Image (tube, rainbow, N blue to C red; front, side, top):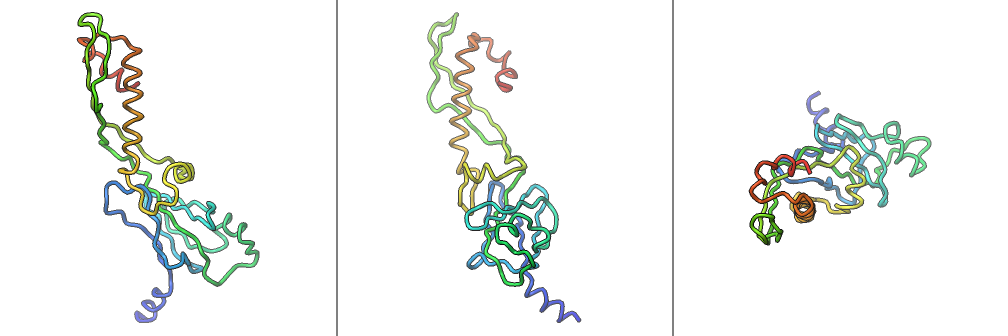
Amino acid sequence: MGLFNKLRNEFIDIIEWTDNTSDTMIWRFPRYQSEIKNGAQLTVRESQIAVLVNEGKFADIYKPGRHVLNTENMPILTTLMGWKYGFNSPFKVDVYFVNTKQFLNIRWGTQNPIMMRDPEFGPIRMRAFGSYCFRVNEDPTKFILNVAGTDGNFTTESITEQLRNFVITKFTDHLAESKIAALDMAANLNEFSLA
């Protein structure tokens, strides 16, 4: 009986991702010619979402849990492919796992000093630095469409430069509009962080 179960498991697709990195945001399940067998078992862990892409279009999204891939639980893919009476052959689909955890302690800092006019000291140069965190929300299709694209191994390194520039621009704008004296900056640190 043990040998039968072992042989049976050899013919069942098991699709899962155990992330052993701290910076991978999207990972595409590697499969020869993207063929997935009917009845494949998809395991989506907490802090992950699985997205099935068929012929370049988003098909189905799976939240954490164990899913058996068949026509009953793949409503969008089944509709796209027109399988009204089920299917037994392998189907071609890309499976993307999206990490929805918080990516913490991403550092930012001004490369060049920010010029500003201080009421007490006149023109001064200021530098700023800090850290921020971010995460992909519960609907990862916008993130895949607009940022990651078809990258099968998208990491935080791919986006941190863009986010760093965004934070620096917002900080510089807020600093100039606030007209807070340089000596009063420390007293307004929380307000700057919130802004």
